[in-house]
Length: 282
Length: 149
Ligand SMILES: Cc1cc2nc3c(=O)[nH]c(=O)nc-3n(C[C@H](O)[C@H](O)[C@H](O)COP(=O)(O)OP(=O)(O)OC[C@H]3O[C@@H](n4cnc5c(N)ncnc54)[C@H](O)[C@@H]3O)c2cc1C
Image (cartoon, rainbow over all chains, first blue to last red; front, side, top):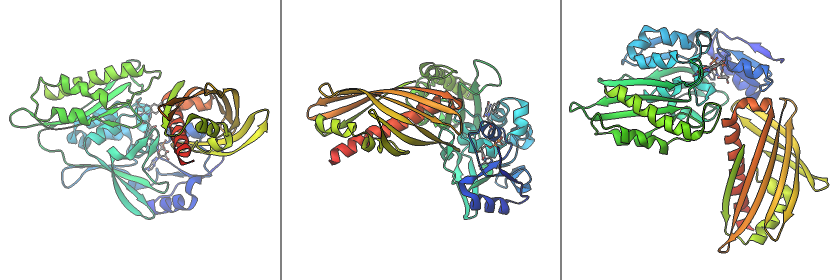
């Protein structure tokens, strides 16, 4: 494994390096995913660009409109322990706290998590359910991508090769919105999800569902939005959710693996969607 | 790992048969395949480039038609390839069946795929989906080519 390691202190030079070396360059943030790939020889870049010294990529802060900005280099642990993130929503800190172990969470970054795009990861479905966006910068400019549109396939995002995620921005939460993240872990507590469900729900004054946003992890090549369930919930009263939750089966595409057969995951997706909704409507 | 892919082509079976048995031409229907050439004894060598997220694999190997029955419209193929840089290999056996259905031809490909070495690290879900995409594109491309002829 031989490559040239760069560790710029500013974003500009990092973007220049990335533009100059193209496919021969690879970004490294916390390194939890990248170091494994480098060690196995699956990645053989000529240049590795470390992001950890770029201060502008760090930090967690409320935005002026009541939303939340998480810098790409914020670690999972930092989000999990951030009073500002918790004030935004405890479901958000729950999603970050359910990633692997403290050692991993101390190292792994939010930007790295989103760029890695393993469909079994915890934060992406929750961020998507909150309607979060990522800001991507390149030497060509800046654009905003909804987290829901970032992953396009297993380990594949819609980011261009010269783009760096600089931040994740969560919009202000509409008054009365409830949120939850539930991760089904039949094996060990530090495993990837067998199925996970992230949901936000808002009730109208008459107690019926006014709005719902539901994303599932680990049951398709990307986080999957359960649109049929969302549609079926709208206008329904609490206690009336089993039927809506059952529709999740039409949205997902789980595969057989060590965490269970696709049939089992389908059943668990329905059970955990119903559980998540029940928790939100309690 | 087993997959089945089917595609319908609005072309008689004999035409599709001729097209599929022209291995170098048919192989161009697999996205990422480069330079397929005969290597004797009914074998062909070639390379297949696959990208999984940030990882690019180049599989070098060969493909052989191990059985063919034109009357029945069936054939068996065997492919073996390895990425020596990464250290991993694949072995696939495929059975192809062409069935005439009301003037059209159904192409059916059953694949049994084994993945060895480091490539296995990607996990079944990813490998299955990649193989699925490749075979799906292959069947579609055959259908397009056959109708264009
Ligand atoms: C043992 C283990 C267990 C795990 N368990 C879980 C789990 O239960 N739940 C879960 O959600 N995740 C889990 N993960 C995955 C973990 O969340 C990711 O590995 C991690 O989030 C990646 O972040 P990183 O900062 O370490 O990224 P890196 O490894 O540094 O980078 C990952 C990828 O993102 C790219 N990248 C990094 N930063 C940026 C950026 N700012 N802009 C653009 N591209 C960028 C890199 O080039 C690389 O391709 C686990 C990982 C390990 C090793």
